[in-house]
Image (cartoon, rainbow, N blue to C red; front, side):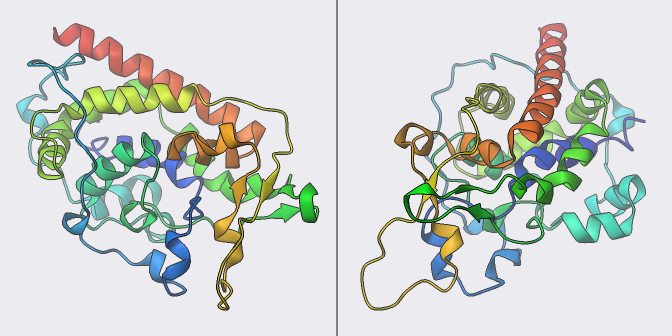
Length: 274
């Protein structure tokens, strides 16, 4: 089970991240041509964020994987065996998967998580807004687009995920160092980002949004990627928390429940490793 489950963790955690799709807040995506977000550029080209201060030892150590867990299969073959080839083709980007995982987990805890390096493909459809003028808000049916990702997250047992995580952790830690965190421990960062996602506020719905003014004669061809929360406190949240809010209240509660279970299992495993 441990070898077959090695990549399940990546699939499940990014079900939460991918559930928000490629519709990140901000204007950076408007400059990209249509369809560019679906490309899979090497993650090595991404400039790392500022490293997180680290102690001389990890706060949440990861237990070493057994020798039987060595040499995990390719993500393509393993994900296909778990979810089927059609699901993998529809939802995942398997190129540079460990590095995409690490870069995105870190980005979710900051102000931006570039969609170009995510290991999951965009949610179908487009961001739905209801109302008009000063009364615009996220459409109540917008969360339906994310159902496949939420269901994927709920299909995996947390204890199995953590056993699998230990098997792949050396690859994740190596990717974390390569992305610009030579003194950091990825598992510490992972637990910290999970804490942030779990702590996402749950304001009353619907959530008001607005389009910021666009200067110049050229108007955006895809204005829906520019929407911001009308409440500046929500707009100031981390990228991961802003994305969690877009899932809708029901999906958000379901995802949080699974992330709590995953976080608890990670911490329990690290305690056993001390």
